[in-house]
Picture (cartoon, rainbow, N blue to C red):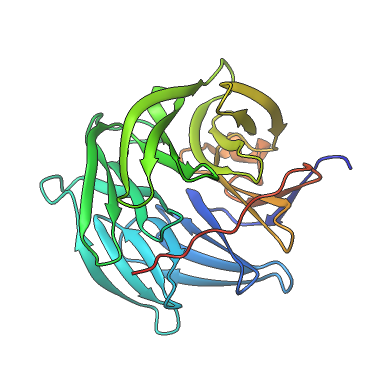
Length: 298
């Protein structure tokens, strides 16, 4: 089967991000960070439902309860989709009012990890070392794992739950930590992949059923597949837009790779060359499969 790239949600998200496949709904959940929108798109009907947020929204993930957990501005929030209401669970970075949440994901035990960054002056230009990595436990207590983060981004866990993978974008690398699934603690930080020239800035990522990482390459116009054990790139899939932001596997067999993108900061001339910038793409024929996402258990 040959690899096919298809534009499936023709949108102009300023910063499309955080795709999550919702198995129950057979739909794709994703956000437009600076557009302040959370979208749910059903591929079978091509219908898209949207919730508007007050502040920049870094991520939205399903909760076991049936609602959603979001990172909006500097708060963890509970979203009720039917009423479109958002209530605060916890505030973070209270000493840094210029910060906001970026990417977030739920670990296999049901706790959420999410990172922060300073507000961007323009794409990938921001005050450095302002961000941190946090987790939110089932009892809604917050743990700060480390600070001095430039631009907190992609994250996921190995299939045996013993390794946590993480991207601080402006290090141009993918890092790994030892992971304790029982406590949620991380240790032994190390680099597992350094971006090569032309690959762009590492952004969001996901893991597949063979323990390989798929990394979205911002300004690189591609998704790369990395073997984190060997520290090598296994393959590259190019897309028709440069600002690739994140990816997740979905579909009934988890064999479709959904990829978000951005158009923020692009000139009219650049948009004319890349009219699909800000859209969501589907890549098929990869011969790879993903695994179901984890709901937040609190």
